[in-house]
Image 1 (tube, one colour):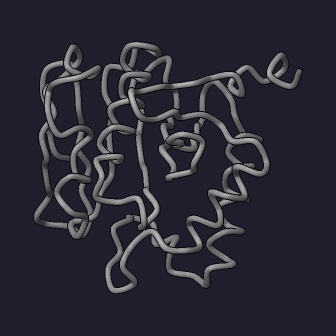
Image 2 (cartoon, rainbow, N blue to C red; image 1 turned 90 degrees about the vertical axis):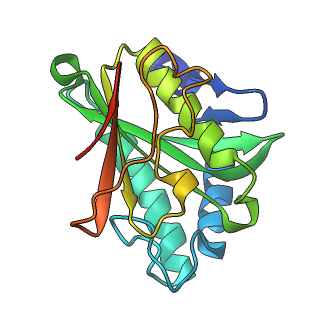
Length: 196
């Protein structure tokens, strides 16, 4: 099996409603199609990198290429894990966690998106909690940094909307914003949350 040579393919992160994992090729195609349908209102840009500001076919293609690029460049010192989010087998979006020099910094970075037709159901919060649980409980992270735009709706600004659930033992989560820039980053640590 391929997972014998690349164990991340066997990784599963589950919540009561969701499963996060690396996709099979056809599931990656479904994720690309979901992204091409739209992730955000065309009049706003909720991402620090405006990857959705392209023609739909280019959004889909760039998503697939980026996914393969990150897996191909995986190393202990510089890694990125782009997990596809499923509910009952349906692709809903993507949750990423990445790190550079993790063994030294114990810091991860997260990012996510949910397809427009699946937004407003608490999926984003649940998938972020799941990946933060993986980072803190599974990998031993000390800090998680989540980037967000100032135009992102409040539920998407914080790594989790409350201190309940799997991340409670490592930190208290709250929304933070940086009023002096177009973007912000929430940093969650074992005992506090701060803006960067």
